[in-house]
Length: 149
Image (cartoon, helix red, strand yellow):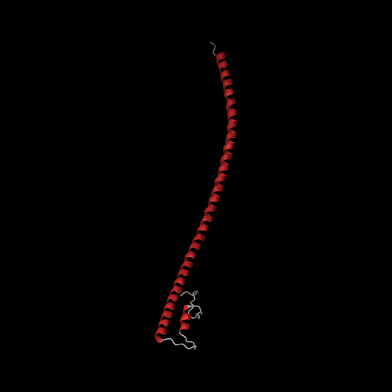
């Protein structure tokens, strides 16, 4: 039996219990006990059987509680381990999300700068087209002057 389990084998019999009624019925009005030896032996055997059954039940309960305690301990340990893993995963996810957010912001800022630069290039391209037309006109005029028809 477990160290924490106790058995109450030496308890006094309550006056309301069936065992007390049997012992009360065996006494006559003079207070003397006159049970027959076979009846007394049968009662003792029954009490021994009840005591053995009670002890077996107590041991069974004790074993059940030990098993439950062990299972609860394992479940608690697993829960603690899972919570630790969850905390680690959540921390890593938070770091990764923050890193991705930072890189996304850098990308957006680079796109905005590129957009501003392209606007400047479009302006420059329009000026170059205008300059190219002027150069073409000048070239045509020089060619007419140098090569008469």
